[in-house]
Length: 220
Image (tube, rainbow, N blue to C red):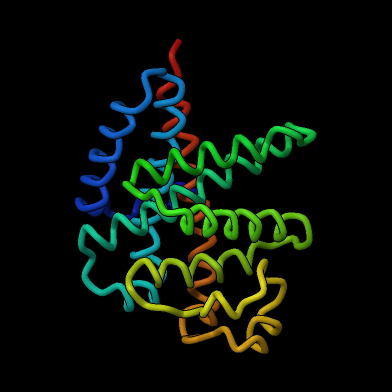
């Protein structure tokens, strides 16, 4: 799917309202323009991806049902954190390590605070997501297991559990291992090839929205 195909996804007003609300939080927290641009770029990507997921991922759409502000906020938070993880992957490419881990925790806490989330468990959830992303890029030429991870988390954001994480060995290295761990509660969504492909398309849409926002708001 080309990025231009994201243009056929109608923007849900609830996601737009969340973007406005969280953007105001960013304005209030960060006095520096570059910091505001960075976090708003993450948010733009997270919002675009969340909006795309409830349109393109049919099983997630079925589970979520009618989107309200609570579900939309949870989805936007999830995918904004994914955009942060994506930014870290770019940082990893330009760094030889050392200071990256400290930067991670600071930025993760900042994003969570934007959504009024101060829970340590949420930081740990992000680190699991980030670990999955890093593992996938290092060991595979695809992001299939990351997509499965995200499908499960998207369903959780809508109040439906697909994986019992306490039984799962992370990162997910194969679906066979995940199945044998008896961690799968509901396999319908995470076994959907169409939803896996759609989630990867939505990831691309989110990345493009993040990059576009960052470039469009560069001071000249």
